[in-house]
Length: 344
Image 1 (cartoon, rainbow, N blue to C red):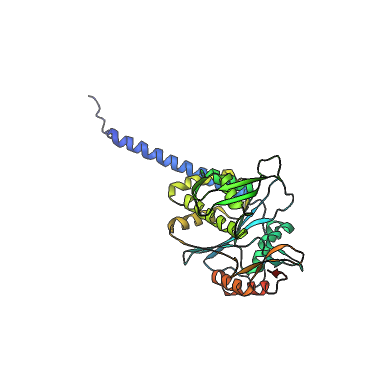
Image 2: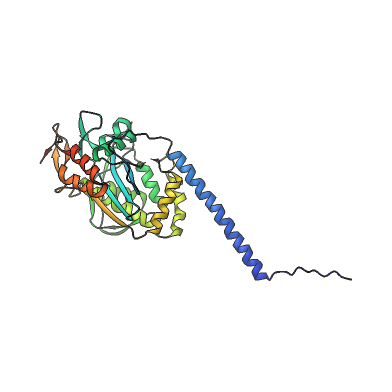
C-alpha cells in the first residue's frame, strides 16, 4: 500500500514571498555590516591623532548639550607644517531644547594667544601645535568646552561633496573674485583665476562648492561674507543627508572618500546618535551667529600693521552668554577687553 505524504506543500506565492523576505533580510544585514565596517575603519583612520587639551579650570561641559569645533585649512601645495585654520566654527547642540547654534569665529579676530604674552589672529593658533592649540584657543578665549572636533582640508572637502553627488544650493548674491587661487591640482600653486558664480539655484560639484565657500577677495563684507556662505553650505549638506532614511545610504561613500583627509574624535556611536537625533527632528531650529561689525566688532589694524578684527568685548560677551551661558560670557568679556588693536 502506498504511503501517504502528510506534509502539504505551501502554495507557490507563499514560498516566493518567503524567499523575497529572506533575500531582503540578508541584503539588510549585509549592508548593515558594510556600513558599520566602513564607519569603524573611517573613524580608526581619522582618529589616529589623539587630542588631549588642558582647559581652563572654570570651563565645565553643559548637561544635555554638545559643542563640536569644525576646522578647515588651506592645506595645499603652498603650506608646510601646521596650516592656518581658515575656518573655525562651533556647532552648539542643545538636545533638550532641540536647537542648534552655528557660531562662526572670524579668522582675523585679534586675541591674546593662550599661555603666551603675544597677540595674534585666532587662525594662527594652529601653527603652534596643530589641532590641540586651535582647540585650546577657542576654549580659553570664549570659556566653552569643546566636546568634539573635526578638521578637514581642501581635498577632503572636495571629495566629501562629490561623494554625495554634489550639492544643490541657492546662491543669494553673485560671487565675483578676480584673485581666486589656482592651488588645487595645478602646476602653479601661487597662480590666480577669475571666479564668477551667478545668483540662483546652483548644482555644485565639490570643486565648485569649494570655490563658493573659499572666495573672499571681492566680498563686500570680506571674510564675514565667506563665513555666511560656509554656514549655508553646511545646512545644505545636512538637508541632503538627512532628507530621508534612504539618503543615509550615501554616508559610507563619504567615509571612503574622506579616509586620510579628515581628523576627528567623533566615535561611531556618537555619529549614529547624532544622525538619529537629526532624523527625528527634521524641523530643528538652527540659528547662525558670528562676531560681525558693527555690533560685535570693528575692522582695525594691529600695532605691526596687520588688518584684524577687533571685538567689542561687551556685545560679544552678551552673544556668547546667549549661546553658551553666563560663565562663558564672562570669560569672553575678560579676554576680549583691552585687546591691543586699533579699530578704524
